[in-house]
Length: 289
Image (tube, rainbow, N blue to C red):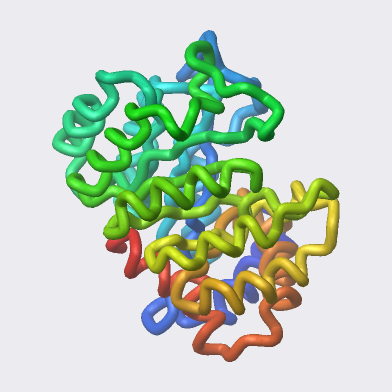
């Protein structure tokens, strides 16, 4: 790191008290294809973001904990996630085919093998209403009405995992039906429900707040085609400060400094205590950090 980056990190870390208000990044992807090759069915092949530089960064930045969100390039090969979970301050999510009858058993095996280190099963439902769901191929866009999905949600509830939904607003009604079927299950809504596109859908996402265990994740603002601030304020009204997480803080000093400034801008209308909950207090409670 350059001296300027180190100074920026020191300033950012000094602006919050780790003991009183932890900083937790709930959405980080790490990958190292030279040592852990991408899956043949991976949906994209990004440049490396390896573990060791990230660990050095979070220590200097004062980020207390991280949720490693197992990414699509690795599909259901979790080898790199297990490598990352050698770092005790990290926890991780799973990516498995939610309509495969074998998935509930795999979930049980993996949670048993990695006790207290896994927090959620992530499910991708990125197909529009006009696009039929996929029944094979990359683990993505399965039919949320398939009985296998409900079996995975039940298994997650039994294991104390959350369901982490990466979805577009067109899928909100099916998510709502599952939430009603499993009212005791925590459901994390990734990337603000992708409701910042010109296609709209914000109210469909906000309607999921009627289920008391849905959690809105303030992340993915770079995907927005419309202003972020109105979505943030509407989410605060719908979900309240106890049910919002912060993710995607950055992978280096420059990104973290920029994203802290965006956080301060977007959340300037809430109290300092509520900001502290969103920065990490809520994640500590929900994920057991």
